[in-house]
Image (cartoon, rainbow, N blue to C red; front, side):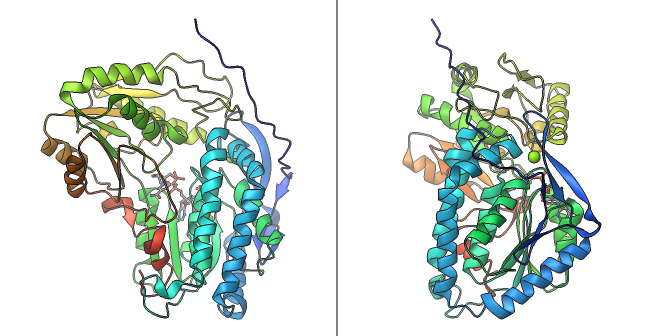
Length: 479
Ligand code: NAP
Ligand code: MG
C-alpha cells in the first residue's frame, strides 16, 4: 500500500510584487534611462511577475558615482563598529522577513520552497551575521594590521542562488568598508530588489549599496567602468574569461567564481544508504543548478550494480512539481534557455553511447521541467563527463583502484568541488590530499558555511569567498 502526499502549497499572500521596479541608485528607486524595462517570469508557470528597469551604461555611471560618493564621504569614514551595526541590522531584517524572501525567491527562480526556506534565506542571513562580526576586527583577518578596502566594487551574480549569492558578495564587501554596484541575473532580479528595500529599512546610508538590473550588457558596463576598483563575479567560465581579458592591464582586481564538474567518489566500503542520500543531495539539490554539484559520480566497480539499484529506487521517490508545494524536492528549470542547454547535452550523451535513465514522472504542462536523470556507461571522453550540464543530470563512471579514482576525478578543466564516500578516515585524508578541488566533502555533500572559504582551481575561478580568505579578497594586499 502506498500513501500519497496531499498537496501542501505555501501561500503567496506574504509577498507583494510591484507591477514595476526601478534601479536602486543612491538609496532610491529610479527608472532606467529612456524608461527601458524587461519582464521577469515564474519559470514553473511561465506567468509574468513584474517589469524591471533595464540599466543602460549611463545608469551604471550614475550608480558608480553614487557608490564613490558614499565611499569617500560616509562609509570609509564611519567607525568600523558602526558599519558592523548596519550588517547586524540587515541580517536581522532578513530573518524577520524570511518567509517573504523564501516565497519570492521560489516564484522568481523556480526552486522548491523547502530549499529557499531552509537553505537560501537562512544562509543569506548567516552571511550577514558572520561578516557583521568581522567589521571591527579586520586587523585580525591576516591581511596586515591596518587593512584598507578597495573602494567601489562591481559585483555580478548568477540566477541559481539569487539572494544567497548577493549575500556572499555584499556582506564581505560592506564589512571591509567597500561600497558596491551589484547586478543580479536577468531571470531572477526580484529578491535583490526586495533586498534594496531592506537596505532602506535598515537606514543604510544612500549609495553604499546600488543595484542595477539588466542583462549581460549591463554586467559588461560594470566590468569596463573606469570608476570600479574591484570586480567580484560568479557565473559561467566563458563570461569569467571575458572579464579577465577585459580587466587585464587595469588597476582592477577580481575574484571569479565559475563553473565546475565535481567528482563524487564512492569507495567499496562506503555506507551505502547514506551515500545514496549524499548522491541525491549532490546532484538534485537546486535542480542541479549548482556550480559545485556532484555531477560526475565515480563508483568503485565492484559495488556499481548494487549502488545503481538503490540509487534508482531512491530517485523514483523524488517529487518533481510545483515549487511552492512544501513536499516538492525538484522544482522548475530556471529558464527556457537553460532547459535547452540541458536537453542538448543529454542528447549528446545518448548519441555518444551512454545509457540514459529517468523514473516515470508527470511533469507539469506549463513551465520549464526536466526529470531527474542518470547516465550510466559514461566514459571520460563523453561530453556529459566533461561539460557542466547545470541541471538534474548525473553522469556515472567507474574505477577499480583509488589511484584510478584520483586520475579520473582530476581529469577535468575544472576544480571546484569533490566528494569522498568511505568508511576509512585514512582513505578520506589520502584522497582529499590528491584531489585538485577547492572544496572537498567527506561522507556528506553540498554543505555551506559563511566561515568556510569557497572557490576553485583551474577554470573554476580565482580567489575564495567566505571565511578569512573571502575577507582578504575585499582588502588591499589581500588579493
Ligand atoms: P553567466 O551567463 O556567466 O551569467 C552570470 C552573470 O553574469 C549574470 O548576471 C549575467 O547577466 C552576467 N553576464 C552575462 N554576460 C556578461 C558579460 N559579458 N559581462 C559581464 N556580466 C555578464 O552564467 P549563468 O549561466 O547565469 O550562471 C551559471 C554559471 O554560473 C554556471 O557555469 C555555474 O557553474 C556558475 N556558478 C558558479 C558559482 C561559483 O561560486 N563558482 C556559483 C553559482 C554559479 P544576465 O543573467 O543578465 O545575462
Ligand atoms: Mg524569474
